[in-house]
Image 1 (cartoon, one colour):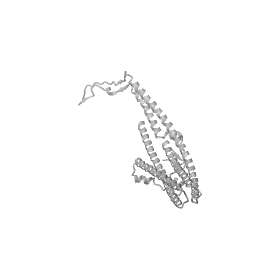
Image 2 (cartoon, rainbow, N blue to C red):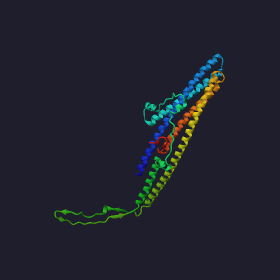
Image 3 (cartoon, one colour):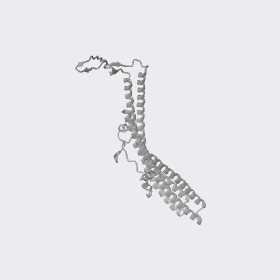
Image 4 (tube, one colour):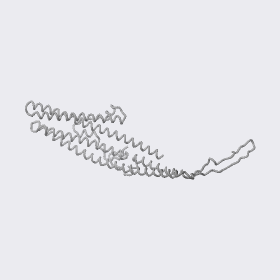
Length: 330
């Protein structure tokens, strides 16, 4: 029975692991789509800058190196876009394989609107990790599927010690309890009946130490199961602590990166305006654009990490977390 309960806990752990994997892939797919949309907008901006640069080159306001710099930046962005689109396709393929759903259904599930005017509104499509408050550590760990499985295995190993010891005890044999002739009746007369009531009590007198070895082996298996239980508990506790630290870090980065995006956007707007009137070089514009692109990618990555850390916490706690904003998770 204990091992049946252990296998049931293993099944729950496998289901939780698969659910976590699908959740991670959905988040990765949405983050990839957001980054791709930002990169496409950057390419559009670079194409516009290249056209303006060529007009200035035709009128003699800029040197040919400015056109080459604009072409180089555009080519690099297009190369990055091709690589990112491949990554997005791989995420979809992984989701199809993990979920067993048709590709069209998977794409519809992860589809999102990337046309929001600001990065902050786009990032909101990746739901932030809720504020969580764990139950008592003992309650969380006791309900963890891996801990339950290890505890049931230890209980089964303990039971096997008793079984091995029982094998060395004398056993009552009732097969020889009755012997002779059974009582027979023939009409009104009774025949002679001989009764022999004497159950035998037998036990191993000499087994070459096999019984003792079986007991020792059962005890060794129990000690191994007990150590494995301790290891699983420590590992589960460490995973919960790591996930909590990751949530705190990602949430802080989520706020700070959005501030960085706002600042980088102001810098690019100002630099672009100065370039339009000839007060800045194209190098300064490209540098400001790279800073904005890096800030946007960092904001998307922070949002992705925040939600992914929450999924990791749910998995690490065995789905025993409780959200302060939404009550117990189901």
